[in-house]
Length: 51
Image (cartoon, rainbow, N blue to C red; front, top):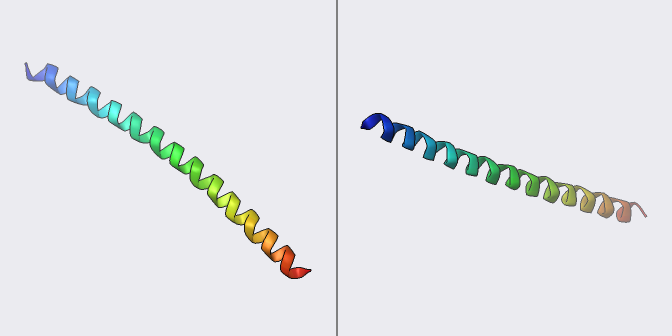
């Protein structure tokens, strides 16, 4: 029955999409932390140069 197979494929695709979304969210969080770190680093560097 191809209807059952389509449902199964759809379920697998949804699962894959969920996993990808979670990975992307984790990646964006990491990126944000990294970006904040760079911003802080630049600020400190500018403050030191101002002295």
